[in-house]
Length: 331
Image 1 (spheres, one colour):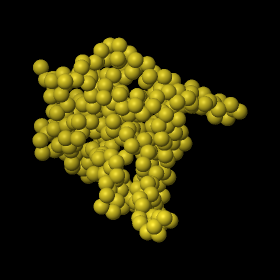
Image 2 (cartoon, one colour; image 1 turned 45 degrees about the vertical axis):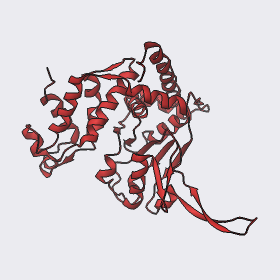
Image 3 (cartoon, helix red, strand yellow; image 1 turned 90 degrees about the vertical axis):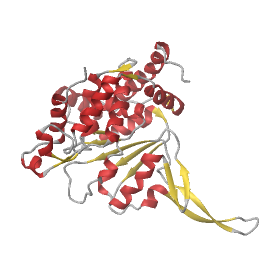
Image 4 (cartoon, helix red, strand yellow; image 1 turned 30 degrees about the horizontal axis):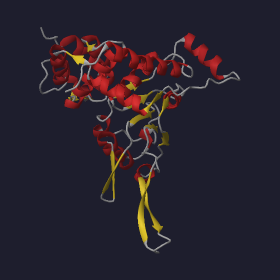
């Protein structure tokens, strides 16, 4: 039976998270909400899809996180000619010089890492995109009839550009659902932009220290699952997810605007991310406010808009806001 978590354990773990935030802050100006959502994804043991226009520092943010975590970090630049074997690995023919026998040996690809930056994921064809599916869900790679385990922890941070549509391949719904969070990076404020200009055009570059290792990340992920979430909050999460499905929803706008609603994986994601946010804020219990804060990044990529919604210029975030207003909290 699991021992209950204590305030002292939480304080120790949260001190590590605070040091991680400070380390990221040495290279990244502002973007506090984005950094928090990435840390929530890390604690919840899920993957994040990061979207924003060019030049907002998406790649720098992920690279900085890789430097601050003492984890094996790889970057794959996805291009139209990238093949599945380029990321998974391939078999090479080797010869035993003692016996003269030849045999095939699996050469691991860049996917075999702890922290993977999949840069511009929507620029590669569906065949290569789908090669990530098993890895993201099962943390394994199957090649030539053999299953190879990926190192733990395994965390995929994928970036995509929303405005350059020429030469891009929209991510299939099955793969979008594998991402725990869809994080949107927005333009910085005027003060933040001035700080970015000053920091990036000078002669001194901040060194990002490594503040956490693999064992500490795994311990934090286990601690996240032990955070309490009340039955009323759990019931509300289930209602929110069910209300997003046109067939089950009592909300007229949902039936009009949504073609396909969120599945059970969305509920799992809301529970885990709410727990992770509570832990980040030093609490041992997740609340309704945690669910509200993460409803949009959890649900926005899991809802398929109808033609009527697109005609009215409605977004999935509009639907999430409607759900939060319309679905009553139990009790």
